[in-house]
Image (cartoon, rainbow, N blue to C red; front, side, top):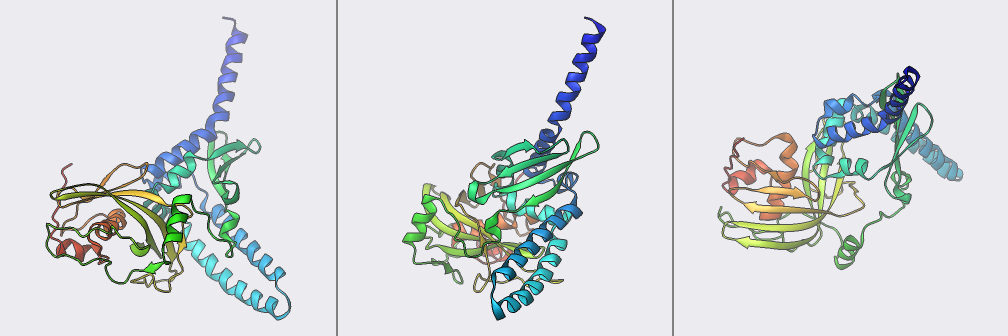
Length: 346
């Protein structure tokens, strides 16, 4: 082969690799999310730039609200926007950090939210040094903007949020199954007491088969709480000592900023931002192998024992006791109440 041909081939390979580098970066980001490796994901994020992009978008929304108000309302809108803007900026500064990213992965990826968004996204170049990942439907599109760092590295520098984030008057879009459940329900029933009698006999379960669209609390950590709205339930199998149940649920979250966050004990009066689509989760009620499995995710075995569980499993543990015992007590209390002492090897 001629020397010129070899050089041409080598140049071609280099160009192909350079063109592929943002796709490789997105794949590595997705892998970090799925493995819940916040440190690895943080290597791909320019945190100061992402924080500023979020602040700019919220400030633009505030200006729009002021401009749309008339007379005295415009003055009140300006004062309100200034107060809210200060709170939002403080929250963004605290949340868009490596530690906040780890929390987001723990709460979002166990539901298959973050990884699936990157999987279902469309990608395109917007110039030599700019690459855009677009997620969501036409009405709910969000964009992740990556910029080239040097020759082969890429970092996320901007997150363009969906318009629905700023439109507080817009009703969330839900799928047909969720819409039917909402129509059939009498409304959202905040859960303050168990919906079925709770048995203190360890061998028995009182599963939440009549969901009544109740709301239960998941994990609260780093200034935010996870919530579950129970839409419907279906028993898949039942045998002595074990029951398998499939649930349709809506996931939500609430923010509680402050130097020392005070977390609510129920959903009463809490401003919860709900997801737009129901998720399917299968719960195995068992005293020997309790588990939770989100659609498209691996089954998560829960080592429910008096010695405690890992922090990232607290939300799944809360869901388990609600699903299997109709009980929203904190998981350490529930573990003792129902006599769990589960040890998984390996």
